Image (cartoon, rainbow, N blue to C red; front, side, top):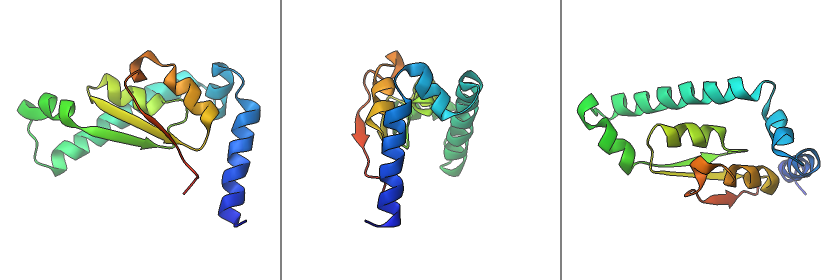
Length: 123
């Protein structure tokens, strides 16, 4: 088993052990989850603003553009960044993570009911 395979397996096992509840999963994300969630919104706004700027999309067309975008959050965890993009109007926000346990909590989010989730091997 390669070092990367060992690391991925270690990550899966760790999340499996420490995420018995949503609060456990939020703690695994980092201290003060609610602050991190607010920062995810600022991050999503920055990413979208950068996307609009690079693609020459004016203010007039941003709302219709948001509805057409599709996003995949690689390493989605409990879905805090996915939720932020969803709140901003992206119609398709899917997630990929190494941990089934973390995805289970993301799937429970009302904002992510239409999302698809993919289990990653870590590669």
